[in-house]
Amino acid sequence: MAKAKTHFVCQNCGYISPRFLGRCPNCGQWNTLVEEVDQSTIKQPNTTTTTLTGIVAKPQRINEIDTQKTPRVKTKLAELNRVLGGGIVPGSLVLIGGDPGIGKSTLLLQVSGQLSQEGHSVLYVSGEESANQIKMRAQRLNVSGDDFYIYPETNMDSIRATIDEMNPEYVVIDSVQTMQATDVTSAIGSVSQIRAVTAQLMQIAKGKNITVFVVGHVTKGGVLAGPKILEHMVDTVLYFEGDLHHTYRILRSVKNRFGSTNELGIFEMNSTGLKEVANPSEIFLEERLKDATGSAVVVSLEGTRPILVEIQALITPSVFGNAQRTATGLNRNRVSLIMAVLEKRANLLLQNQDAYLKAAGGVKLDEPAIDLAIAVAIASSYRDKGTRPTDAFIGEVGLTGEIRRVNRIEQRVAEAAKLGFKRVFIPKNNLQNWEPPKNIQIIGVTTISETLKLALA
Image 1 (cartoon, rainbow, N blue to C red):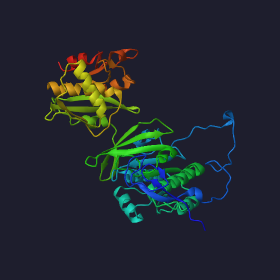
Image 2: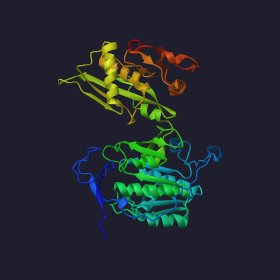
Image 3: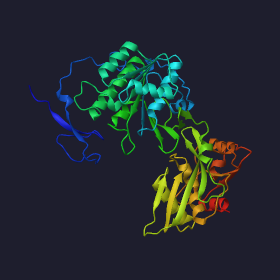
Image 4: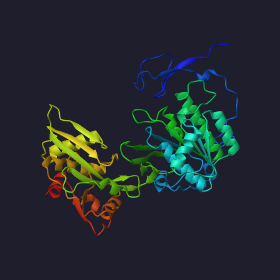
């Protein structure tokens, strides 16, 4: 019998090499190449090509394809419904990733219990915990249900047989890195295993119209472990983020075939599980000091939701030769660019100043509308002059010092007015074609120098 051919596969990016290498030439990681059997050398039985639904594939005219509006199933967590685009789509494959201990299993356990209480059958497949461990956590979270089944198993053949027998409406896989496809000879958690397991889960979801939730581990860099094709195959990718030292968790959508991306849901972790935060703006601003310098509030848009976040800046003289630029929750390159604009267009000598910036509350901001608040916070700390606690700032800063228009200004201003802000600085070009609220003063600005004169007067 001929020996099966082998090759070496990077467990970080999926790069294939015919020989062993200490460092992956594709992603640059060390000691990630593992020897695996070449699956192409293994004879596969001849099967008829079918679609995911099991029907023999054939061409169809686009006008003859029957489209029906997909119904959505609402959970009791409104934050999760919004991140998913309005609710759970039947037959979808949802991938949830996050750091260890952040609350992925807790979230799915709560959702499973809620779906079961509403009359849906749920199968929770765990490859990391025993049934007793899951039961103990369920008691702590007060999760129960008549059609809620726990199944500690890692063999995909057994899992598929159980799904065929039970035919549940929802399946939770915790986690995909612990599942084993028997027709793949590589180790559990390898690139080949994850690819094969995800392909089988996708066939289960599309062929049987079963919603499948999959938990995925993340690497040290914060990205989902395994091949990138894992994210391409699924319908929705959610990231569960947060600091283990704080109680707030952020559920962020980075891919959604049934809704908008970059949606944001905020939860609070306590002893009884995750509870949704209805008004995150108040939480982000509740500990803000009244007369502090280096502080500015921005109305950032996360998906369809406007959120008020405090941006803090600390500008101090540099002790070393090169000034430091440190940012938490903000893009460091964006901070450096805005500081260069302030130095050139607003006459602030910042080249010998260390800058430390932070978005309070652990949220990550990355949109052009936060530029003006960053600039005001930096100037406030540098001049040691505080801004009014009832001022908010919205706008993009250009390289020539101009304040450029941003999108959805009506929603941003309305959110600031709802939380009691008295003044909001916006680009002057955003003042047209809409009626601002009467209980807040709208100040249109055109340059960064003009804004600093009015805000730090």
